[in-house]
Image 1 (tube, rainbow, N blue to C red):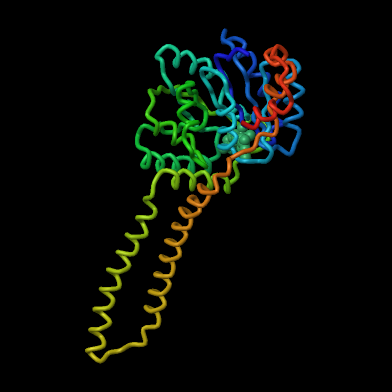
Image 2 (cartoon, rainbow, N blue to C red; image 1 turned 180 degrees about the horizontal axis):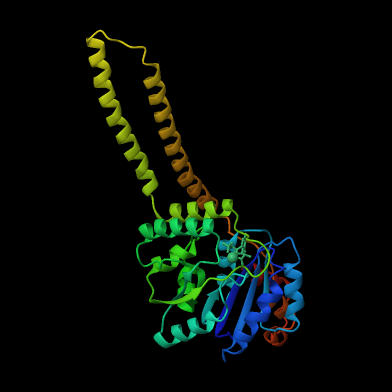
Length: 337
Ligand code: UDP
Ligand code: MG
């Protein structure tokens, strides 16, 4: 099996509606590159006919490869599976819904090869096709993330990017449980370039990123990169304590003046405020403790159900036929070892 020059990783969750459109637009681009390639469709536990459709399409497109995850593990986990299984010298990750134009892949590859770059970010120059809500939340997300990882993270760079083999290997070496690639990639500090593109409308189907998943991505992003929220607890506590000292002086003064008021309102406010602070801090602690627990459990982010490449290669692998026949017991032991 010769390694292709380029692997295109496409995570797919219930994308049967968009698949034919995607293939119709992606294939001419890749065939026109003049390089060897494989397209790695990662089916993230879809409940529709995504996997069956990809299998059908494989009959006419040998470079198309299907990796199925056993359950819906999320976009980032599907990307992880794709990166781990990719074989190309360069790996590009792209959404299935044609919001990232496949034509940009050719520009990315040229730039990476020309300037010997390990990362080429696809940067969204214009998000007019997104809803106002998506643009607003995305704007907040990037501002927050750039304040955490620094300016190395281009504004508007999502998961449409090209990585070199060295970069993919570096990412594979990280023992992260919940990798957030848009932060990890700039953080590693490899030489990078950018290609600006116009984000298009989803070609078919509906968004697979509801608010819940967006919140999860943001929480994962923050928690995996900074312990600053834990420090926030200390600041809240300090401000609360200062407020209490001021209030105590006032209360004692009133007591000495003999003007003791029932003070029900202020008491309730203080109790409420401190209770809220404590709950927030507890919640923040819980998030980190949860991550530590997850880390100790060490569960993989995904389980491969099947891989059309290796499943097909196993029975008629040439080496396998030529290998001298070993006794069964020894074979078993070799597999276990
Ligand atoms: N996706 C996935 N698993 C999920 C959710 C999404 O593999 O649990 C894929 C989806 O099929 C698409 C990409 O991630 O290829 C981005 O999702 P989508 O385009 O729906 O997100 P949006 O553009 O609305 O943020
Ligand atoms: Mg999309």
